[in-house]
Length: 283
Image (cartoon, rainbow, N blue to C red):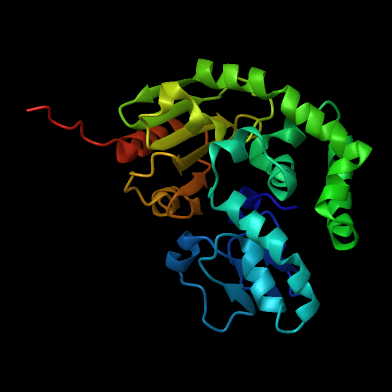
């Protein structure tokens, strides 16, 4: 798995034997699959004759599925998995999905890097070993069977048992600034939890967009993630376009950028300002 910042910084050597998925386009790759709206507006633009597929689908998995299905009709048996992947990736979820996830949605939360399972697991190497087995398991086994495996149950227990502590950290590090739900995780360790819980907390229900900042690598850069609330869908900010100004990207409703330590305070201030709406007059 490749970090997007390493891609953008040119630290990853890409060759004509590489297939890029859910990453920025690179002219040297063999195949490229993506669905981020910011890629449609990149400079210089993606050439029209690239090999692979790009569309504004709910998930990159859906783009890949649509590309290969005509050549491999048996892939249609994964139609349900793709549908649920779309739900998680596009945040088409209910509170029930968030607090009591089942099936593919639960598996999606366990795998989502934004749930922070790998970073804060009791044994990160063990977690990554389990994660690496899943592609083969999904080919041969049902999701229900995978969720019943003892190793999967271990990670489900970790995920569920950390939720209360994670919500406590969210409340400690988050404040509502007008319509913006701002979380500052710098110097903090947040237990695993799915990224949508923040929008369900009553204290932040009036917010329609979140801005979160967290530590990057060796204090050289920081990660700023921005996302529309999935319950208060009134923000007009094009998040992918906004993050694109700072070397990142994303979709209309969610995106990320990773400014360097020297620029992070200014970038954060500008992003917060761009997300802030003028207060409604009571006159």
